[in-house]
Amino acid sequence: MAMSVYLYFLLLFISVLSFVLSYFFTIALEGVLRKEGKTVPDVHKREKPMVPRPGGPAIFISLLIPALILFLLNGDRRILGVLILASIGFLIGLYDDFKRLGGREKVLLLTLPGIALVLSGIYFPKPILPFIGVTRLTIIYPVLLILASTIIANGVNMIDIFNGLVSSVMMISTIPILLASIMRNDSTLAFLSVIFLCSLAGFLLRHRYPSKIFPGDSGAMLMGLFYLGLVVEGRMEVIGIVALLPVILNGFLILSTIGGFIEHSNIAKRPISVILRKEGEPLLISSKEEGAPITLTRLIVSREGLTERDVVLNIVLLSIFSSILAIATVFIGELA
Image 1 (cartoon, rainbow, N blue to C red):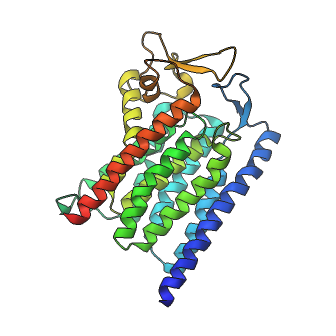
Image 2 (image 1 turned 45 degrees about the horizontal axis):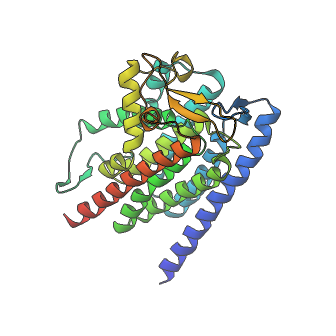
């Protein structure tokens, strides 16, 4: 009983700490970025307001401090595994926010978090698969982990295109991870999942429509690699992939139509166009240009123009559906 009460208060403490750090550091960061002129236009708005960017440092602080406190209390090395992935990804993204990396450079650099985790040895090459159980992939798993490092980081970054979208999608995708952790009595992964959810919730209050701040590459890559850390250290690879299907689909569509990794700003033809109306929010419509890349957003608006909020709602609903499938995968795995 005493231990359960202790865990309850620890969970409450790190949840509140993560949320408060995220929300208030984000607000403080907005002021600093505006003062330094680090703003970008919100291109899907009529007035194209200038929005501070990047918000990644605020998310990073709100993840790092609670996670380190948790590590000091329980000593679980898997926490360090998650932080290795997330921290290196964050630093690469932060450099990209200010110096701008090329597409191929970014892909290669984002293998470094995976390489660092493999070298640390803080991972388990024995994923748990539904109906099969524990598998042993000692040789191929490190290679897959390095590939996943760059694929997930770039994939999450690619979906960071609308107000509040990437924060919402990553929150929804983390819920099956949290549920699986609880069902497996894995308190460390459950606590890390809660830290992640609360950090994103605090940031989302400023990132939601209309955004007061954008996460930038540092924020998006940090989200993707912290999520990958949860999946790998919790041995929930299948659950994580199913929950993140909209992100994976969007990345696959983009890469298959532009022929490889290209920096966003270097893509000549845009997948969607913005139509300004006399009244109401602008409409997003599918690009009519030949050779424009196919994206998840372009497919959603292919029949009729939608507002930014409607597009976000559609992608969020897809994410909810994928997460429901992932939750079903959790139960199948536990009952198998």
